[in-house]
Image (cartoon, rainbow, N blue to C red; front, side, top):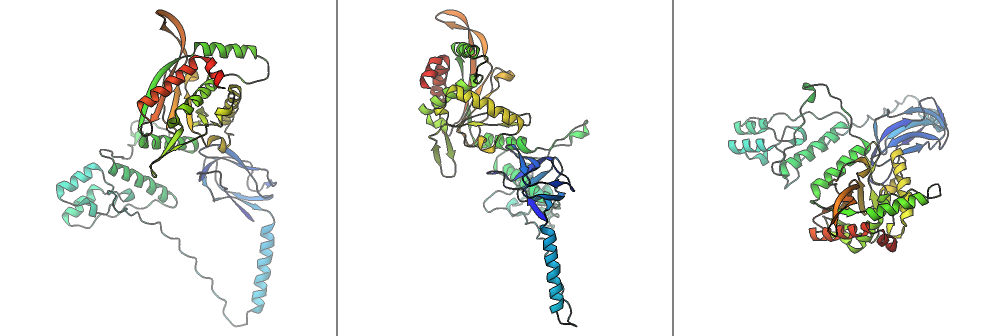
Length: 447
């Protein structure tokens, strides 16, 4: 029997959600034939069978999460029978060699499963406790740092404080969750407790039971949506966001783009989109403002300036946002960029975008214009330091040379990391971007 374990699906990926099984127990599968579809927090992948044979069992129903290294299928490839025959022969030989009358050696007892390690508070870190519990400890004259919490994750509860004040034994600790759930729950409660105790006035508590007030429906936070939640939380907590807004007059650019589409109608080539022109304009701006093409290493206290230009764009997949990356935009034509945007956006929506096509980005653009909305304040795609948000192009009355005229206006918002750049830097960067988008000749000259 061959035990097939979920292979490494890419850098930083430790689990995946089962989307579809191509085989069931009892089926015969050929080597390299599709075995299972698994969706990670980056993309969906089809995993082929590494061996041919009869499927003995599969692990994980559709919707279940399986971890890297976990056995997900057992395939009878013939090796099991050979191994069994060899084991039988070896047992027979051993029996013949054992002198008569001697007792057979009893097998050693199976080692007991090690218990999950207890949560221990790290020295120098505040104990996990709610502000109300801390206030109670002060009122009762109890040093809360000397207590062992009975709540989830070692959290200090009010009963722990009252027992200490009365000289009574501390309440029993909460029972651990069974099996693998204990590890995940402990990790979550540890993070929540640390956040609650380290940030003043922040007290993360469990949600109320919403079903008390009416019917509810729950959905597990998995795959792409879970990755988005983690990245956005990290970005908003860690990065001090600042937003700089401006409008670009794209009347000439839009007229040029539409003329080119008409002349190329029915001919070979990709549809020219406004986003492809913005990618080129952003690339030109990053060359002049390297701070927005960087990352900050908070541990080394260094700013890493990237000398390459890989522009990502947010794509709505129906299951959550993914960010395909167009690499080497400083060496690509607007037409090439348009083709690659269309190709990667389609792959992302189909869940077939390779993981490497979502890595290595240096700057991100998100465009809500086609969906509606006049403007937005985007969240930085950490560990990048800036992101550009595009709104909807609208015809608006503006003043030009003392006269009111109708122009096509594109609202832009640059969200940036204030640790790396200042408002003046952002104003200059967006000002240059507006200038390039207002005159298509400047973009063509740069190309």
